[in-house]
Amino acid sequence: MRVWMLLAGLAMLFAIPCSVLADTYGDFDQCKFVGEISKADQNIAACDRVLADAKVTGPGRAAALSSRCGWWWAKKDPDRALADCDEAIRIDRGYAPAYVNRGNVHLNKGDVERAFGDFNEAIRLDPGNAWAYNARGDLYKNKGDFGHALADFSESIRLDPNYAMAYFFRGELYKTEGDFEHALADLNQSIRLDPNNAMADFTRGCVSYLMGENAAALADFTASIRLDPSDAAAYFNRGVAYYVVGGHGADAEADFRKATELLPKDSYAALWRDLAELRNNAPSHLPEAAKQLDMTVWPAPLITQFLGESNAAQTLAAAHDNDPKTNRGRTCEANFYSGEFALLKQNRQEALRLLRLAASDCPRGFIEAPAAMAELIVQR
Image (cartoon, rainbow, N blue to C red; front, side, top):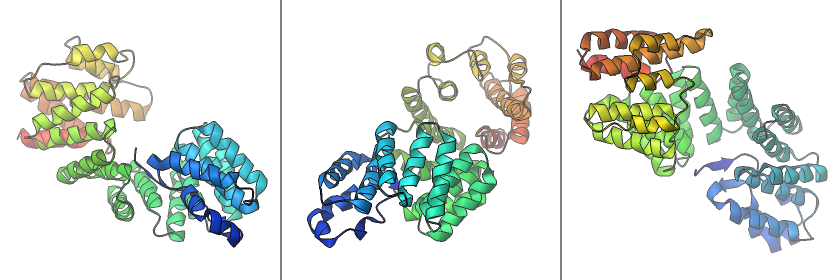
């Protein structure tokens, strides 16, 4: 994925002697952990050359190690990354960006508590470090502590109003909370500041879709795919938007086909592909796809219904879960997909009953809610 990295760079690098800068300025500049992941190998090589220079010591060496740590992290090599960050901190315990980068590495290795400690230390050392607040906010968000996450993202933006990733993370948080208006405002700002972040386009597309703005959603999913042609989620969600808009059956089917090629074990992609194929009177690939799906967990009951091995009542019963949140989500899906299946079987009255239930009861962030409402408009 082409992602613009704006986390912890070489802020202290230029404190080293000018005689060193004259010889190695180009490598120092390329080594910085600020740029595109696609250039990580070249940037690591630049860091190697900096670190091989005996004249680079102290803060300069710590900064180069910290940046190389960041690039190894970006390349998903946490062991090499951790070794470099540990060495950077050993050399200069006051270098805040190294703690930010090491915190990200700890997260990559599943050590949340050490990551939290590193982000806290980075903020203690440098209370004006927008990167550190953004990183800690993302950790809070992943832990489900949305209040602290929002505070950290907002502080990051206050410290650096041009920090695109902070707007992106805060927009993503607002989306999770169902505050689509604030999410859209932050994602607009993130994309304005960094038009090359595929995930920002994708997330804004999801928000637009959930708000019923399908034309905007289609444009954003297309932009996301242009930046990252390997993202199955972007194809899947664009396929849903095409399906809901109407008149784009072939486009929807093509996107679901691509999504299933990229994620052959994803039950929802297989299910939506079947919906599109059946609506287009095309041969169903679901029996073949089901061989690769886990038919022991939800949403397997939806798959068996579409295969003709169960009915809507059995699907609804299978959706039940003792956890109220899980139960609500599964019930939403059971009603929506059973409604779509009833439409395909020409049972319009039952379809409308089930789709009304989905439109009224589905959680706001579920893709099935706008799809049910759009289907009801078409069926008037």
